[in-house]
Image 1 (cartoon, protein in one colour):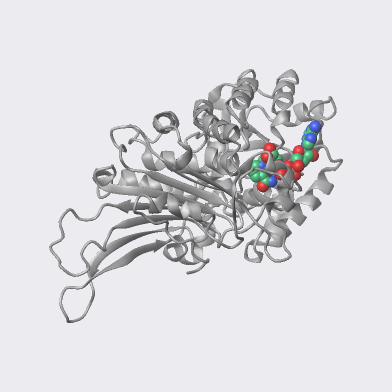
Image 2: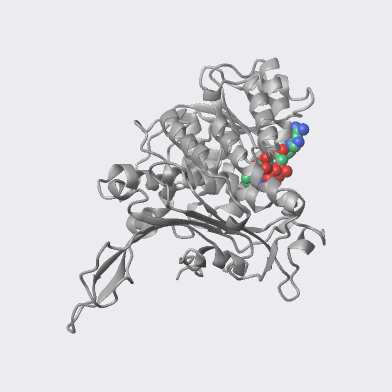
Length: 487
Ligand code: NAD
């Protein structure tokens, strides 16, 4: 199966922060892949804008190095790369000063799609937005893309929304959560709303509980200073896990269009029940042999920031009352694994005597490392000897399903950038969604701060603190195992 590529209209994309880590690792390699997939029109242009002093050729050499570092050799092609680099130009610019703005105004074409990617710290959003208007570079057709973190609490998120709203209409603002760009996450909507099989069962009558796991093996690395002010709740739960929860729990939108989808997601966030202290476990990874633990990594022996969090959440609405959603995410865990597992209830009455009560349908949506879906189905174990039941997976791995063309599947950033160019906001967070997510998150964080809660230590390479296991054991349930990659 070859993935179908629909070319976009021509565009000018300005990347503020075009020399930064995100631009090098994700944005520019992603654009190159879309170019190689022939999705970009011949005269589309990418304009890097940042503080470093490069000329166009210097920037092209800089980007070529980034492609070297972050693209698989199979995608490299000298001719394609030269053509891609020819679309790039660079303007040294200071978001807080005057340098570079007139050149940018003279460069950006207003008669084609023009988008501005704010790949800089949120402290610069206001400066960029103001100057884009002051120099008449932006207009009512412009699009702006902003990155996480979108605030660190409700107040700061409101302030950021206000800064953007002063210059742009909500329909022009694309808040990226790259989890929403993942193939499987969108497949979640296809599975729910494109099949007759699942939706009738998609409620508390048939679903026992849901687990969302985002496990990482890395620690805080060089981001210790930033991470320690944030923690797993702000860095992962408030955005990525919450977005996944919304897509699982939302009502069917009337259309697959941006506001219809986002209205339904917002209703889910607003229906989340407050979290009581016993529904939550926070953890911090300890040292591993001679490798430092969390507190050494962030250079604060007293740090109370969590590198792991597990929680039981409930949605107070007709569809979900009684079905818990268990969320967990953490660093330095056993393996890198992100998945959503939907545990259906057991059959109401078993007509079989053997293995009674042992079986349960589970729909697993794997986000990484190997994007795909599995549905476990109970069947008869083959062979003579009576009716023995066994759970077998109906497995759909995208890599296998797409065979040699699996590499054609765009990664999350590529897809989202192309959605910006298409003007499709469905997979981007709306301002009110972000604020509602913070409004739910803030009291939880305030609660543990008031209580002086200290995160529980856990071993590197484990599944988190034992208390996280207890969170489910108390309810007579178990977490799915965090399995090593490839198993
Ligand atoms: P970075 O520090 O590597 O790069 C920052 C960029 O901003 C550089 O190009 C720098 O020249 C430019 N810049 C800084 N001050 C400027 C000014 N006054 N005027 C003009 N340009 C200026 O940061 P990054 O890691 O690329 O992150 C960029 C944004 O993306 C941040 O908001 C970050 O939180 C977010 N983000 C990054 C990642 C990632 O993996 N790096 C992931 C998610 C979100």
